[in-house]
Length: 212
Image 1 (cartoon, rainbow, N blue to C red):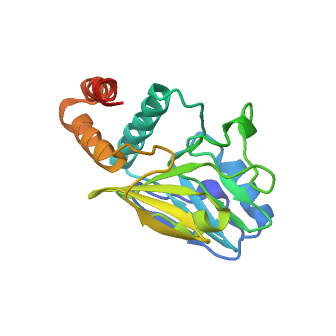
Image 2: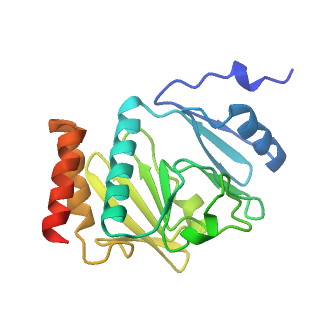
């Protein structure tokens, strides 16, 4: 007897692994799950992982994404935010959903698009993963060719740059040269969690006005 996807329950903070899932089955599962959902997926060569993050994960995701948007807007850099849009490439048999992602150098290539197909679209210039309750799948992003990946953990922000097909840890971001990104993100995420988002964002904007 085949199970209906609606019969499967994954609780927040947990994950489920399915094997021997072909591409059409993946597309069917994504369609059935829909866009308005808490679950995230990661797919590689027939293995499908479905994860449901905890609430604290979602809060950190929103904060880090908002900080990046404010930074890009302050610097007058054109960008297209794509949130947790599914990044997939059928030819590579890979799919992953970041916590949030941004097109910066390649923003013009995706203006007006609601869905991405990395067999024809470029990968996002920056993907962000919050590893408070789950772990980042580096392999997916390496194979899909995402040039910069941020991983935010309880210890703070880590930056990884794609070099010769593998991620190398970096202290700086080529998308934000000459800006102490790691220190800034760590500082203002903590401010959001202690004095509240609104005041922290005002402080962040003041820092940029005085230092950039």
